[in-house]
Length: 149
Image (cartoon, rainbow, N blue to C red; front, side, top):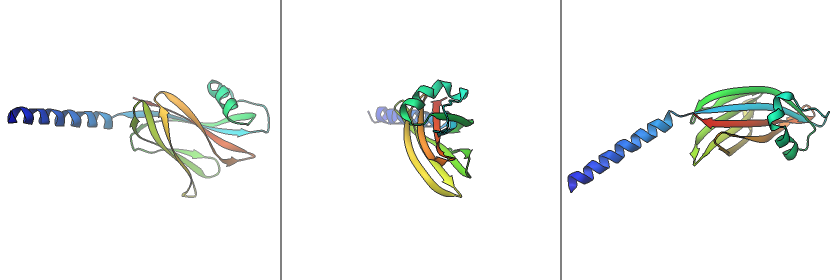
């Protein structure tokens, strides 16, 4: 009986070590689109066609211009960085998986000072769009998508 319990404990110990190391090796393919939104005109950048209906239904702006796209393969607790206009930096960091959702920490810094921070739960293989700081008679908006590889 004691040997059976020892065998079961050893089995589960090895199993959990294997599962943890497999999860630690997962990469999160993260795509970030930096968008300038304003009411200066009625224009939607062709590079935003696949999210244009979401932008128009959620935000009050009439013009959406794609400023930058960046793709990163990040490990959990690894920060990805995107340089923004106005001497700002966006960092996205996948923290963990909660069910079928990726938990991200998102920060914006300006002159090394944190000016925005939030955590989001993003459904695997989906995207989320969040508003950001003011910029040139409008705002910066970020579309972030993630998928665990």
